[in-house]
Length: 149
Image (cartoon, rainbow, N blue to C red; front, side, top):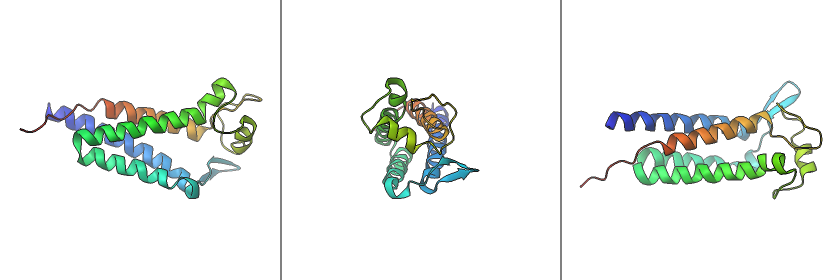
């Protein structure tokens, strides 16, 4: 049982680390040719780099409580991302700004899909969302550690 816990926890830590490495690209920005993979957002989002680092540290060092703190953060992060991106794609409007402004803001980013008059998440955000969901699943699958008597 102990080796299973270690293996699943290692997988969850790796998933979280991959997510953080990918997310760190937004702290500095990355331009490929004439398009951005992601523009620099350090000024606006540096705090959102600290939160996942802290929740990951809690997950690593405080077994049960750390797992749930990390899981709650990841779910909240995904919901925010979903409402900021996929919601606009599905419903053509959203809670976080005007669709035309969103299309304009991301026009210089690498797009996998382009639908006229509709916002579609760019490549960076598609991968970010996949990594968040992967981290959620991996953390959720880590079994609780039995309490010591």
